[in-house]
Length: 83
Image (cartoon, rainbow, N blue to C red; front, side):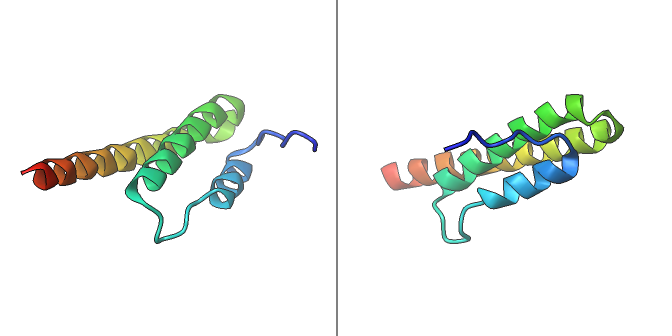
């Protein structure tokens, strides 16, 4: 099977991210992993698609913040469940 081609533009990155987006019913851990991977991809494309550098970095920041929020919520649930 041929290796997938890495995106060359921000638009292609959006398309790629949507292809591996989990179902709405996915676990928080799956959503966190998705957000972290999306953040990495947006960070990488920021250096490739220089015309959209700032927009790609904004997407990366947004995805990192969402991943962090999911992580905080997961920790809170573990604390509540352990009490």
